[in-house]
Image (cartoon, rainbow, N blue to C red):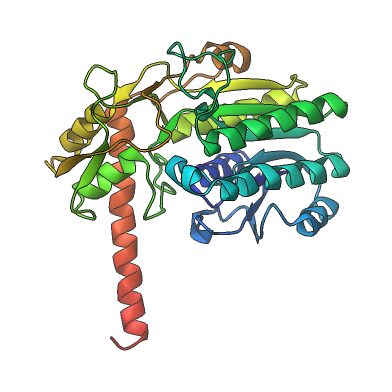
Length: 341
């Protein structure tokens, strides 16, 4: 049996691929490399460069490989960009997911794990937010993901034997403890990555987007989960579906949050660098606080996170940024050498 991982050359997807190949799974990665990197893919996996919106390519993959499960990461994830360019998000996150689902149903694939988001809750009335909280996304990113959840629910109802798990991510951060992969997109907007880049001198300064929220220090509060714990939840979800588990939706977070200022202070402390920080206007589509109630996933999947420590998350992210710096310098030197520079 083979697992198809869409977006498996990206940040979270590449961690998933390593986790699967580490335990001996056959893995095919489908990624258009628009934000991913071929070198981030486990050498034990097969990389196919292409788009999940390409129905012909999907049909060819399903007809030539014995795929029993799909883990679907491919999509666009930047909230402010979704406000500025909603049609991109409805294509990449919703329309293309529909194409993938149709190909899966036609091929008889029965198990589907979806990378969803806490953005489906919008501004929760209560934090931590449970899976039963009202679904009221306040930006196109959240809406595009919620639409995909709805499609999965309808497809599972219409096609007997098709089961899915939708995992609603809170704020994912950190890097592979073994140093094999991490958040590698230079212009990524993840707070911890941006702060680490600033600490290492890659950015002159960083910004806090709004310090007038109704929170203890005026900055947004988020539930930061280490990427490796998130990936463990996916592995648990895969085993759950293979064991005959019913379709389900789970939050992925630790159940407590940190403010933007607390995160920045932690990066300064771990890095030993007091870098420049400025306050800027609020970004469109940002809720004041978003924290997970994660009892359901612990009870149903027996998920047991191991890395719930903000300083540890920051330390792994910082180590990965240093690795990227060295990698980029080596690439520049190699390029200069090859061109006689």
